[in-house]
Amino acid sequence: MTRGRSLGLFVALAGLWGLSFPAIRAGLSSLPPLLFAAARYDVGGVLLLAFLVVRGIEWRPRTREDGLAILVAGAFLIAGNSLLFVGQQSIPSGIASILYGLVPILTTGFAAAFLPEEPIGIRRIAGVVVGLLGVGIIARPDPENLLTAELVGVAFVVAAAGSVALGSVLLRSRRPTLGTAGMTAWAMIVGGLMLHGGSLAIGERAADATPSLVAVAAVVYLGVFASAIAYVIYFTLLARFGPLEINLVSYVVPVFATAGGIVLLDETVSLPMVGGFALITGGFVVLKARTIAEELGK
Image (tube, rainbow, N blue to C red; front, side, top):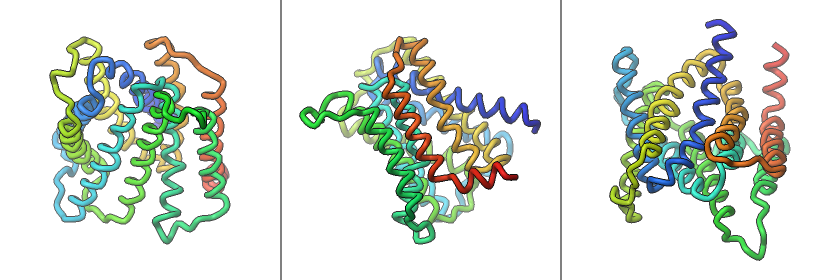
């Protein structure tokens, strides 16, 4: 793969995932959040699994560890991600995407807390604190009114990032034989089923959905492009470059999310958004300073 093609795929992945934020925001005007999230992963999981079968890539879970890994990924990485849909009911796409950039930072924090081989150090603590300061600048909580719709939305999106980060750490203790692509496909299917159960449990009904072209377009975009196609690109780049470079996509995604929100939903950019983004990115750099220096020195 040429460097130009790799760069093109990287930008395409950032664009596909970035535009998913305004797509979620638009679809929520017609669909209940958990049912919407479930539909996304129903479509994405089935399409990704079909792609693996057609290409002859290993897709069958064969061991108990495979099953446990799929359950962890389905519950934390997929079903937990539904909190993003709930949060985006009250905050703009750009803010949601910036807050979601906490995933790499929170992953490091959870790893230090739960994995003996990942000790807590000053640099790790500093990186997490800097990232959380970015959240504070974006949220700007008012002690006299902590339950505003926007602040609650921020809390849900941060919780979604935390769920994905915790799931990533818990998966490190599993030893599945199934490849990452196959596990992701099954996790989307299992997570989608969990979300359908959650949707029914909180009283969401299909009748609550308002049939519209926007709703259909949002589900198709999120399921086909931002899930199935995006994950094929992700695994292609992961095999070539490794996790550090792929993590950097989290800091390009907000550019596309914010631009999409401005063009499609008439959202705006604020100074706290820019400052929060800078701090969250800075937190990642503090955490990964040694690895980044090693990569640049090659």
